[in-house]
Image (cartoon, rainbow, N blue to C red):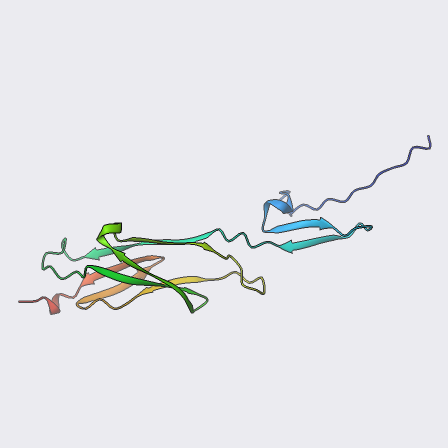
Length: 138
């Protein structure tokens, strides 16, 4: 009938979800049907955890007033935070990037400064300190 067709290109993820619902922003390259996928770092990663004491509710009064939790991104120290009973021994680092400058997912880990008289185990982002009974004060 002489009516001109309008063509459009749209990209979806394999699961049918729109690409813009993922970590990519899709845009058309002007004047073409080419699509440009740009990785978008939304800086919405939160690393949070809790200090757990296994010392019979501080029976021997051996807990420090506070500890220092250090945050690492791919093994590199990026931040630290003082954690105490005033904060219910909880901590949180927010506004973290999901990806490094090369688009690789960043692996976040935490450590704490050694606590005298306690053995430390890190489970995910929770830090568990168990009283070393061989070092209980007399």
